[in-house]
Image (tube, rainbow, N blue to C red):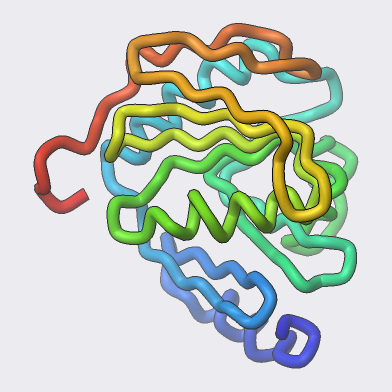
Length: 187
C-alpha cells in the first residue's frame, strides 16, 4: 500500500494537524489524535526510567516513524530508541532494524491497534523488545525474541510491580508510578 500511495501518505503527513499521528501497515492506514493526559504521564514515567539506562550512542524519541525494509509497514511508537547517527540523517523515517525497543501506551479507543496490529508489525520488523503499558487493565507486558510475525517471549506484570528489561538496557522498570485510566471518563 505504501509504495502505491507514497505521495498520498506523504501529503497526509505534511498536512495533518499537530498531534495527529499517521501510520501504515499493509493496506491499512491509521490516523490517531493526540494522547490523553494519563497516556502522556505514563509514557513520561516509563521514559524517565529508560533514560537512566540508555545505551551509548542511542537516544529516546517519541513517535519517530520506523519503517520495515520493504516499506510495507511504518509505525510511530510512543517511545523508541534509535542511534544518534540515524537521527542525524535528513528525513523523517528510520529503518526498523535500528530500533532497540517499541513502547506503546494503550489507547482506550483503539486497544487492538497496540495489542494485535502493532504486536504483529513490530515482530515482523524484528524490533527486539515491545513494551505495552495498558492503563485500561493496569498491566504492563514485555514481548521479546521476535521471529517472523510473532514474539516468542512474553512477561506480564501489574501496575505497582516491577518488570525486568533485558540488555541493552538491563534494568528493572518500576511500575508503581503508573496511573490507570479510571472508570469511563474520556481518556
